[in-house]
Length: 83
Image 1: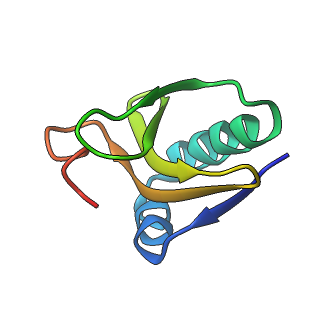
Image 2: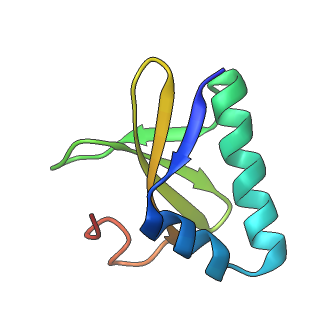
């Protein structure tokens, strides 16, 4: 199992989501941390990965023990431009 760590901006993004969406994203992150399963793709043009959870995206980096969530939000044209 990997540890999920949120950056301050990702924690703020998560808190701003509606309750049901927040629960869905938290469950998706937990599932990925526990099993490694999820709709994950490597980002092109920069380092990191994205985890798709419904209409929401989590942009993250990971190593052997930690998942560092950088951005959490709806898929928009600016989702992948935030750092």
